[in-house]
Length: 124
Image 1 (cartoon, rainbow, N blue to C red):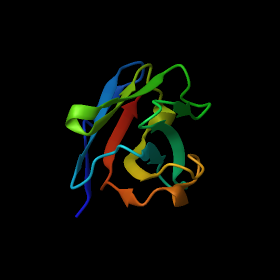
Image 2: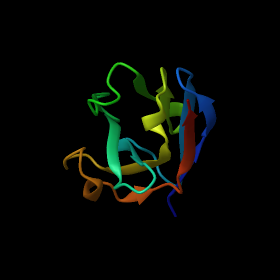
Image 3: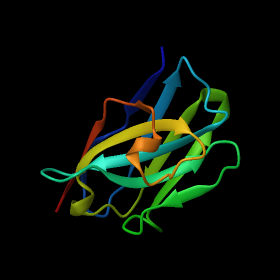
């Protein structure tokens, strides 16, 4: 059984930083696309960033480009999301997801496995 477990969320002031982790069990990410999505209060889930595990290609939403960085640790089957210069509009539940490479990294339908989500709250 595949499980993705996020951690690292919390409350931070605007301008601060957080690092989220997504650890996989029951699966290795060798051929996968691993992404982060978020769902702000009262809004739809949206794409944040993704990484092609094998090629190490990375993709970012315009709203986080230059502030967020996705990375991976193959030995730990873990993906990280470093979030710097946080803004109040980054407040959301953040979800880690994994799917087979080949689909659109922007679409949630590409991703088969999802974590339970971790809350990130940015205060002004």
